[in-house]
Length: 184
Image (cartoon, rainbow, N blue to C red; front, side, top):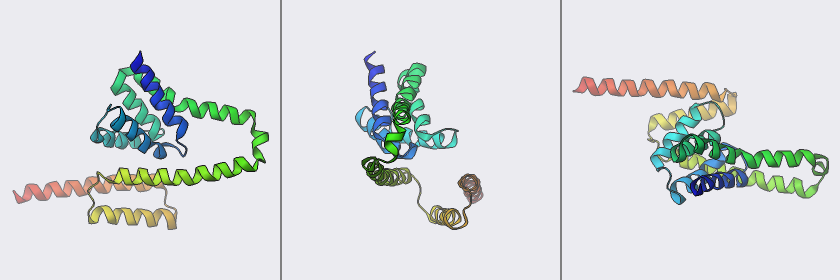
């Protein structure tokens, strides 16, 4: 029972104190699940991120479900996922009850501006953490630069860029393996 409560409290805190969505939560999930509780390794977290990004739904929910399942099987997955979304659910209900009071409140307006600034920092930290295990070579930097230009200046859909990146990565690896086989 104690382990279930710890799992619930860990993901409840992550859901409560992280604004900005799934990517902003990644660094907090890593700190809590790798460093503090040692439920998963860094390598497992990298794999979780890849799978969570590739499956439908928010990355944080997918990651929490996987980690919960790893720690305490099906019930652990249910507990961790519920705990992660519960704070947002409660906050949205409270906001909806008092929305008219919040709309013109200058303090709330400034609070949200501060939250937005913090979200940018959390997302930058997530980008740095996600890029650490990657092989950084000319292919990586070329793909990064081309994707950035296509998305920012030509508004190419991110999904199309991701699918193209997957295809190019597979082709590159296949060509690399073919060259290794031919050299042997």
